[in-house]
Image (tube, rainbow, N blue to C red; front, side, top):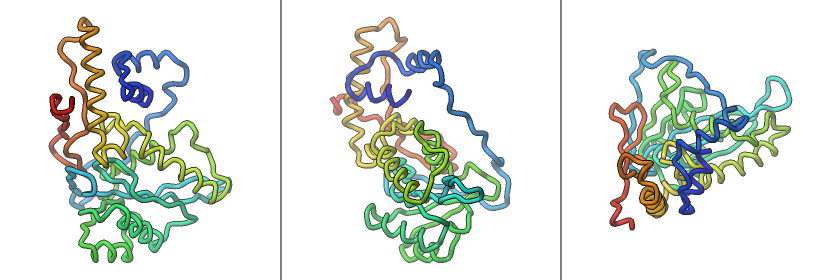
Length: 270
């Protein structure tokens, strides 16, 4: 529903508020089929110090993880590797393999560095591939800080967890993948969709690629124009002139202060 709302908005059509779209959708069968997954673990457990990262732009902090893609055979799953830029939410590296392996993760990062440059820090959970000496040596050679989740704390890596959740609750996500080529083919279509078409709620319903390259500002200007025009046509529906949401200027892991939006100056954007 957010995708439909934002897509119409980007075309300059403000038909109703976002809340109204969701109220209408609530009356349509199967709109609420996506379940809420309870978080496991609890904040504050484990003696390890909480990882803290702050990003004020793309290319500063990456997080990465590996998730299982089911096969038809019991006990066997393909492994989807993914690196995400936490500021823009853009996937900057990925691969699908038969297994977790240190050298495969290193190759993925080397390709991501070549395409997107090197971040200041990389965060991951505490799995064997994430804590491998081979990857640690690569990051150290490039002067990149690395951190890991605390034991039994699931929300130390929220950006990668959110991306995998988006992947697995897409309407066309297969229950199983017949073989490795099928898994790779599906993910190779998912990543461009996620980066360029997915309207991400954490970045004001812009696509990750637009936040990554800064083009969201032009989209914001169109949205704001439609927003203000809608207010002028229906002032009785508002208590005050609406503010058009923008992506937060600062994002991070375990930050104490809430992120602040960075809406462009309306007069400059017009």
